[in-house]
Length: 137
Image (cartoon, rainbow, N blue to C red; front, side):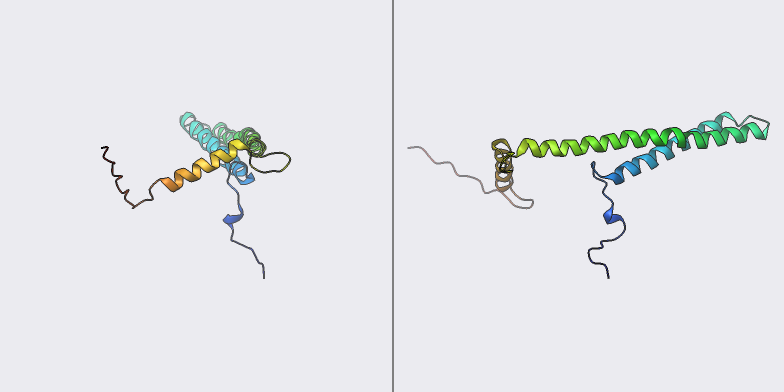
């Protein structure tokens, strides 16, 4: 019996730093390029009388995007993933003290301000009681 198994798609990480996004962008991008190539070829070859040139055109419209668009989409999406990972690391370095790994002053003030705004803002469905003004004598 396996413990901790959460299902099929729950293990895939589609966050900007996840590898599943790289695979998804590569597959979807290559598929879109192939479909657009087949659409263009079917439109331009509809008036061809010979079957062999038409078949070769469809073959080229199917194979070329896989060999050109696939690696291009993989390269750029993996570089975007590397940038997302570097951004996460930079955010941690910028918000923590390097010796104690506690929040630095800027991160602490931002965190406290966000908490105070959350506490002071009315929750959904609650009404704010009007504040009465004091009369000056």
